[in-house]
Image (cartoon, rainbow, N blue to C red; front, side):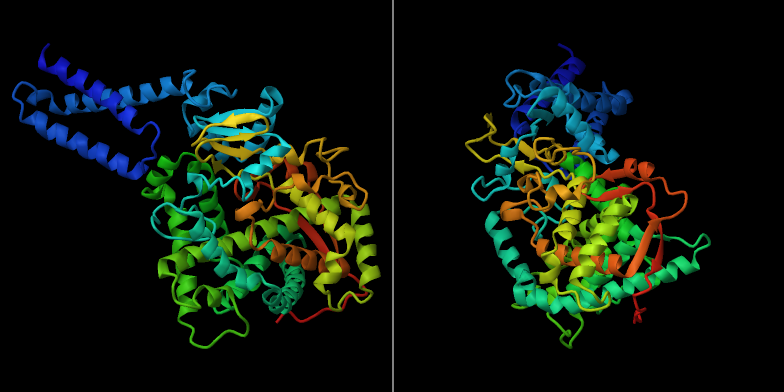
Length: 547
């Protein structure tokens, strides 16, 4: 055997050994890529010292590196396609079995939920959508999120570039760490904590109505983008709740000149799409493509630092006051928590309010019925709106739940612990990543008949046919959204005040069908078409200063 043949054989053998050593382990992609390039450089340097190969050192080094990679990747693909893989018995696209890059691509396009629904219609309850990722379309799948299941979040919840940093939303080393941080957050969401937030919701809601009128008056076609206004209002509100208002975001007055909302969405899209291939997310973090994630981190850190420099206590206990109460949470953790609070606290509520308003205004009889319900409970449209009374209004509650059902087809992967688990009659091997097919469950005739794809809030009314247990908008179990009650309070208050005080209708030329078809869902929601409306303050509503 000559030297070159021996080298290529050795490279192939080393590739196979690498697969044997790492095929069930997770390796950070940036570190693996750096090591690979370092090995290539070292190999090139060594070959230059070999007289017989010196003239072809670079080409030989690249060839050996490619042989090594092909052997490792080929062995990986063969194993994942083989009947010996633990998930081999689950049906699904062959390309998905080979690499999670397929799922990343599907996720990035924003129509993952529709494709998964079609795959479940074809293959049944279980669909293999990655080398070790299984989607489950069954009511029993909700068990994977329960306390009893003890299934931690998948690596797609890691915060790239933040090893060792703890934040509530992101994947943590132990459930104990998550529980301890959740306990700190919970101070804001007690009965007393929620009560102190009510005046700020009231004030920001009146500012929203004034903002809508002001923007409409300033526009050339006398219309306003309602989705933008909802986002700006929610960000202003989170600025109050998280930082005590010290950052003065005031997006309803100033817009979003720093691109916080767009940047937050771009970062979330990358986390939800590229994050399905965790090793690739580590690499993207190091590249210009990951700039959106860096920018969001920098902005959140700046907001947190501004709050930490405030020496006078805020008018009420904001979230930061709970996070810094005993001084035990490191500054890097606080920076990451700022991202969780601002992005998580504004995104879902904004899009739900947008969709709820879209649905009721494109079916005006729902607007009329909701206004009648609200007017009966609150004869003065400018009077107080106690949340306990709002929560008792069945149609208002139904409209919010129906908007959540149709607008939150989220993908929440979990890792099966040893020794495995039985779900919906099948055994899931340890280490497999599983997720409930939330969209398929939320539009299933089994749970939401008739017309499961249509907006029918009456299904949620007493005596209706809605299966409340099939709605997974806020997850459940130990990782249930801690701000769920606050989100409902905000949505109830804003929608009630809007319907009581304003006539809202889609602007002339608005294409309701194109708008709905242009809704893309990742871990955030992107609207390809703006929701443009015209607003008019009702005769019995008194204008209120938006200061």
